[in-house]
Amino acid sequence: MYWDRDPPEEIRDNIRYHQELLGTRFTIFDRESASKWLYDHYGKEISEIFRKVRHPAEGADLLRLYVIMANGGWWLDADLRIRSLEAWKKLTTGSIKECHLFTTHNYVLHNDFFGAAPSNAIVSNAAMMALVNTFEHCGLYIAFKTGPGVLNRAVSRAIYNALQSHRPLCDLQIDDQHRFHETVEEYEVSYKHLGSSWHSA
Image (cartoon, rainbow, N blue to C red; front, side, top):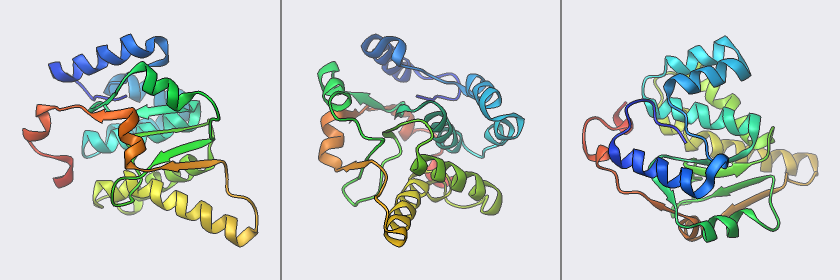
């Protein structure tokens, strides 16, 4: 989870909720700790790119891909809430896929909640595209530049490569919006109604 700085009380409540629910399995980053983590794991260049993003949402997009690429695990946005420990256990026990994604109602992949193993090819490809877009298409709409768009393209590329090479697709599970809502719920936050949205950045 990521919040750049000075989280409002409702976000602090959500952070506390997940700290109590998941314990040491839960990590929260702010801008400084995220920048240091990126420096430690990927070097000065990636850390500086992260610090220069034009909106915190873009920074969160980059961070989520690089954290999951290095460590594996699950990413959860700060305005989402895991419904219960039972819902979490249902998702994370049993047969675990190397990459687990969810679609929205209109079949765009969520990047606000997903999971993958370390060095997963789809997440790694999405991280590469996000970095390329940062240099080649710096003014691109954030959802396409670093957000869900790069995950969608990475999955499309994985399917295309599997078909072209006649090799099996990587261990991938894609569930729908109903399954997404069985595990997490949107956490009502007032900040979305105040100030400028990332959609206009």
